[in-house]
Length: 152
Image 1 (cartoon, rainbow, N blue to C red):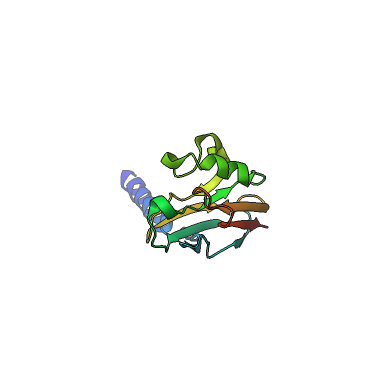
Image 2 (cartoon, rainbow, N blue to C red):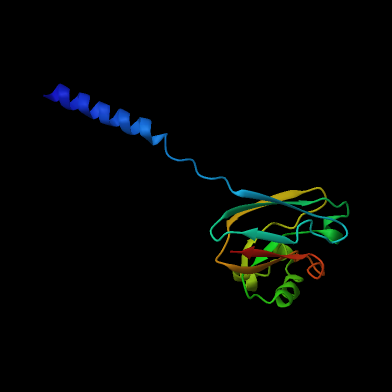
């Protein structure tokens, strides 16, 4: 009896172990490559996504000017955030990659501020249907470096 129980337990454990590796593969996030340059331009100004879709923004500063003069980041803001107010507050937030502590709750996703030839990435789920602004919050850049994420 003890032998049968051990054999049965072994078979159950074996079956569970074999099926554990057969779980459906998780979908990889959709990759969106965005570059920023010394002319203060994003290479992508509009992104379309589905609510809940996992996105991976690969952000590259392809410029050559020093970070102190022409650093770039990519900041996705929540719907309804006043972009000008956010960018104005960001000008004084150098130590936190131009994401002001008082407005951190307005950010859905962001990269660090990058110097020339540097790259960063951020993975996030697209929020609920709506339109969301993204900007470079380095001082003075948001007026030219902006775009929208449209979620359907």
